[in-house]
Length: 389
Image 1 (tube, one colour):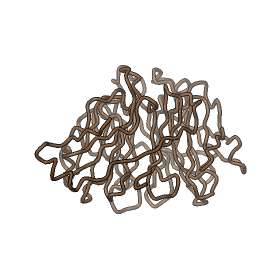
Image 2: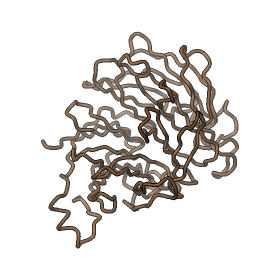
Image 3: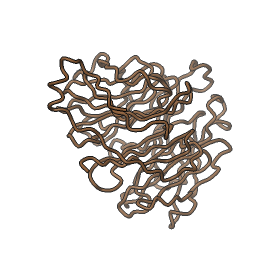
Image 4: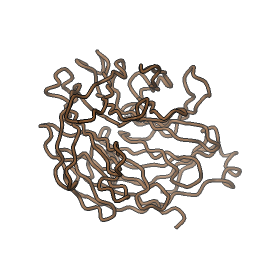
């Protein structure tokens, strides 16, 4: 299908003369036996300097060694329910990642943490292809997403976000209690927790972000109430609302010229993707530009400079479970410095029903590649970035 340009006809000739190059990707399936493919992470597992692919699948956690993509299952049956997320990060600077996993996926049980949700820190053996030792941590019901974040003063914390608050029904009731877990010197010992947020509902995803010049991370989080920024002041978390649209996915990037923007899927599992541009003020909601309203069950957003133009593009993936339809991945390229005009290009079709998606330079050529985990399609696919080839 030829790319569709979302620009006014009178602007088209001028934009075409300076339009960024078209994307070029090559597909490779590295696993066709995926059960669900809940969560993808990319990190160096074995310390060879190459980024490997990690996957939290239905009952297993596994990693795929770059460049052979040999599969190694390192955890299995952590809980009677499914795994749902994972976070990988080199926490001690030895060149090899540490790993946390969210499991016990039971979103209809919002009250009892013994029957819903689980958080594990996995301790790696000397041979990282063998089974890792799970350390179970305290948790809320409906654990859904997690990320490692840089804490004030250095060090790492694990931020864990449930989908629902305790006792929620129909996305109403108590707010979702998001906690930051401080990594202790001995991960088998007690982990202290700090409350990040307790007011959002149906909060599907969030992203660590370095918002300002200090090294610590801030957070972007989407929820039924809208899109929010979270940061710390004197050790306490505070928040600011950026959008009042129910947001399922959010990522941040830079437009041509350097202005920050955010890209979303709306609402949770929604059919709309939108872009928000930094207004340069700490008050009021950000202006919104519709990118697409034809998605079916949107489930992943990735932002990176796939085209090598010095600014970012937005990859959006959908799985088409509810409503049923054809899944796909689409790339949106900004054509101006204010994020009003965008070019749309289809990267993938029904061959991958995207459950999760990540970007990283897997082959060391300087260009980010895309990793797609397909739910109904049961595959883990790399879209190799062949820009300029």
